[in-house]
Image (cartoon, rainbow, N blue to C red):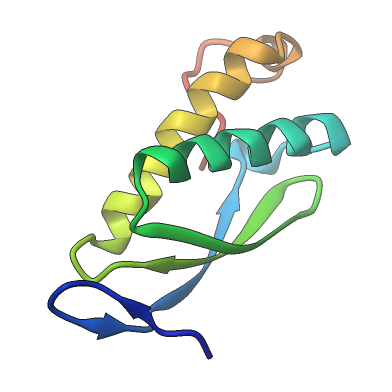
Length: 108
């Protein structure tokens, strides 16, 4: 068990998140998942209070084990992850425009 320190507290807050794709479409192959992990690393650069412990996937969902500072809410972190990754993945992989025609985003 690893404790994180800040100037006013010590914490250990880990969360297991499951992010399913919209309509449970099977969009995650190795290329899309590798790009998703790159985007997660970019999010961590801008938000150092988010620590991503583990990432795994199946064809239609992603598992994340993350540690979040008590200053941030879980909903806020999920919103940041979903918004940033969905936008970038849709821009990179154009086949998703056919899978999700008429809809924004890829997350349920």
